[in-house]
Image (cartoon, rainbow over all chains, first blue to last red; front, side, top):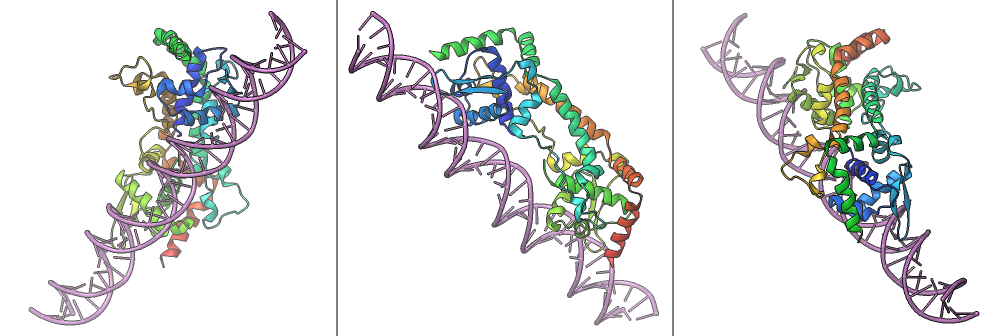
Length: 158
Length: 158
DNA sequence: GGCCCGGTACTCGGATACTAAATGTCCGAGTGCGGAAGG
DNA sequence: CCTTCCGCACTCGGACATTTAGTATCCGAGTACCGGGCC
């Protein structure tokens, strides 16, 4: 899985601590000492997926496009890593003996079905958790984090 | 995910149809028109993992090292694709402000925990299904497959 | 005739190239702000 | 002094290198079989 998923998730959480304000990729990258341009690339992907909204020019930057309760972890993963299953059925059976060339083996191959079934539970679990859930857990487990993060971004602005 | 996982799963199923006999990588590859040497590499990985047992020389080949009821889909995936989680936590928080350099963020980072939780359900689902289950489903859904496969391998032997 | 031995053909096994995708970087397009000029 | 306009600095956005991991291939190590030679 793409490393950008981790960056995107943490950045979304951080954006929750800075509501109603556009934060530049540069500042988000500085927070974790990440390469700015590359993080920018991931944020662009989130923007294309409708998770973030972007603004150009001075006072520009990124902010959440919708409430964090409406952003599931699966949304972020799909935006960065693509919608394809990890296990992709290449319809190997089509090359085997007695194959039906007009059949869709992604549907009828039992190996493919078994793998896909597991992947569905994975996706269901991811879609059941939202950015808001993560933020709530952070605020409960590490009560200082929210304030510290807000303060850090405020200081960097100058 | 590695493409070899698909090949490995199908090959394990096929080996179930040819019990008590060593099947060469060449024949297994010919069945799906796969590159022989590369499939051999995957079978080697299964052997290292203790899923298959291999024999060199004439009359050599691969066979299941244990009963198919004892081979879960997760075993095969881990053997080919490695045991690492798809989402690997790079402990991004260590570079952030106020980080504890001696803490293990793979354990305490809530983003990492959330992703890992989803991955656990995935692995649980995979470990719940065995090669024997797949074979049983195949025999029930496509009753001719077992016989046809056996016959195909028998004919190729000549 | 039976037994032993060496050659041979065939297999797995790991070391070695090649290719695609993830990672990282750079420059151009777009935009709001600030200041200077003019009324 | 107020308004308008122009230039500038800053941002995102996508096009362009670089590195890693997946894909594919090749040759050597090991082994059972087959044939010939010897007892």
